[in-house]
Image (cartoon, rainbow, N blue to C red):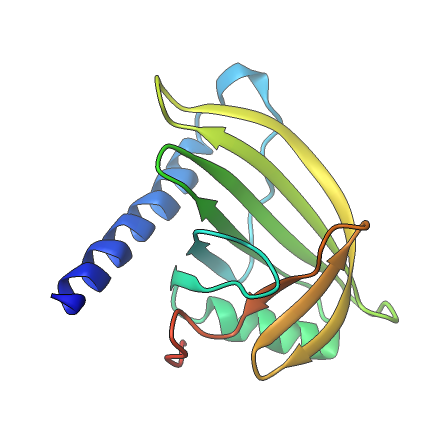
Length: 158
């Protein structure tokens, strides 16, 4: 039964990621669009200092992790989803900065009654550490957050 629950969660997460990509083609309410990403996408229920990812596109997490370790240009999309609303984040590494700087762009979305999006919010972040767990970020006085290097319970990705 646990295997079925994991499968359903993975399918739902993939649908949200695909929906976010496709929804980006048609922008409701004139909201500014989030930028394209170079590494790929991931999905979670909560983005915080203990983020547990539900799914990720192949190679997305190792790509972002390797770029953060060397402070090279790269970007990743992370969707923090709820039942009918969530937030779509894009993290973009500014190459060659010391300490390594990242720009976070986020946009709230609501699917109930048709896709609606809030404004794009920009925050400036710095890399706190890149460890075996992933990339730890501090963004404009917000609580720290983690972009993990693995999905869920620690399975290798990529």
